[in-house]
Image (cartoon, rainbow, N blue to C red; front, side, top):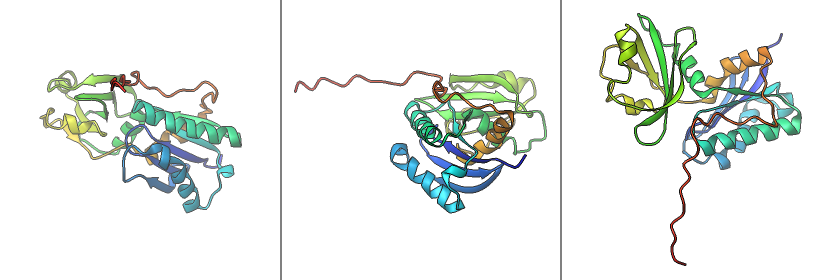
Amino acid sequence: MDAPLILNIETATDVCSVALCLGEEVLALVESQTVNDHAAQLTTYIDQCMSKAVYGLSELDALAVSGGPGSYTSLRIGVATAKGICYALDKPLLAVPTLESLAYAARQIAVDQPTLYCPMIDARRMEVYTALYDEEGREVMAPAAVVLHANWLDEWLQEGFAVVCCGSGSDKARPLFISPQVFFVDLRCSAQHLSPLSVEQFGQGAFVDLAYYEPFYLKPPNITTPKNTGL
């Protein structure tokens, strides 16, 4: 089977990015330099990405979105945009778990001992969305919202594992996890990191139902009630 042409869309965090990939080869990548402007940026980035690689949307084999966890609003923007393209052009949609894609990218970092990979996405205050994966990509700890503290990794460190931390939430962990067994890599969510898993899912035919698919929010949105100004 020829390598599939997949448009990968990453909107789980405050940075928006789009990557057009032929198999795992990144043909074009467009990423924001500003934050939290996904609704205004995303369709423009898609156009720029396709133009850079000289492909049309009708030539796509599939679209893939970062499926969460992450920002409630940002995930909805990414999924709604991808669904609109899929409906209009009759293309299938793939949903790549955000933390798993980060862990896959971090697995390129070699550590000379048994290693776990700990992707973290920044949430409120000292909270992160995180999970743990082994060197084969198997889930050791399911995605969860975790309030970080200095001893959080002790269970795995005492078993002799090294832990590689990455993602936007790892900045919170860096001053807490003081251990020669804990490593930090400067790796953030990016559409290019979706491609290995989106290609794998495409080969498996693991497409989501366009009508019913929703991102994995993990937690409900943080909705506040407007103050009564008395007007």
